[in-house]
Length: 75
Image (cartoon, rainbow, N blue to C red):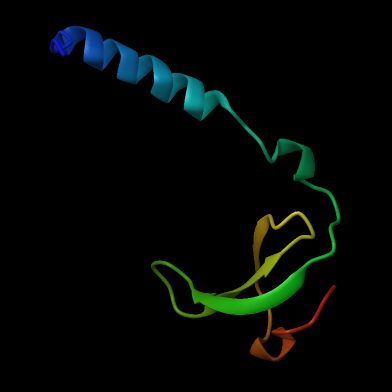
């Protein structure tokens, strides 16, 4: 198979990256109330403490602040 020109590869990569970054699949869920199951905790980046990690019924990952005792609960 013949190699593709480097300029073409970069142009294609830039176009695909731009398309990928324009795709916003979770915008419809922003600022809505969803039921979530809290199942784990994850450390905060660049600070002390942690986030509680949960998932909606569609398995969308959510991160909230709260007490560790909430792990395993469904809200």
